[in-house]
Length: 160
Ligand SMILES: CC(C)(COP(=O)(O)OP(=O)(O)OC[C@H]1O[C@@H](n2cnc3c(N)ncnc32)[C@H](O)[C@@H]1OP(=O)(O)O)[C@@H](O)C(=O)NCCC(=O)NCCS
Image 1 (tube, protein in one colour):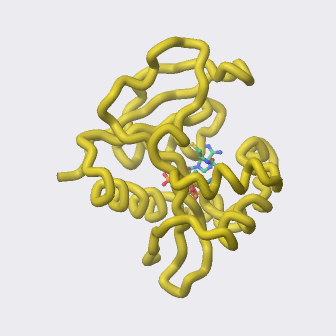
Image 2: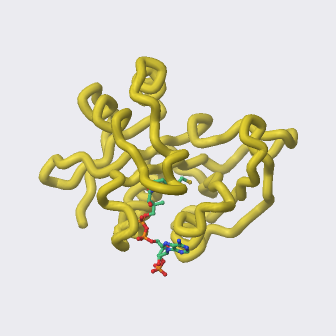
């Protein structure tokens, strides 16, 4: 699958705001309201399309990809944080590795970090499997300040 990643557009943000993830993944659904649109249009989010311009997912980089934690100082300077979401109907079909790779390549060109960092809910075995296969290693487990649920912070050196 060939992907293109570019700045978020309002039509794409409006579509993403309406995406709903099923079952345990429902926590990743956005609320379809103005606050969500503001966040998606903040400059931190990027739309991912196929070359045919079909919207298939989004990435976010930096602060937007972090979570508020009970523990202090869990995000040392250096790595670039990456958040991502594949369109719900495409999830669970083996597309994750290529999708993640596209985001990593984009981040390498756009930000040139030495290291990439992801924060993932510990219940999300699917995402953790994907990140582990892509070479991410768990650094520490932290507690979400609002939900009190455990999350894993994972890092991986950037490809040369
Ligand atoms: C996370 C996401 C990118 C993964 O992409 P995907 O296409 O759904 O995942 P895949 O089908 O490629 O599966 C990834 C791996 O997880 C494995 N997997 C799937 N379901 C699993 C489960 N319940 N438990 C453990 N492993 C699981 C798959 O077998 C695959 O491993 P493999 O390469 O060894 O076969 C995608 O599901 C997504 O964007 N979801 C939105 C919400 C979300 O989870 N966001 C992550 C925020 S950190």
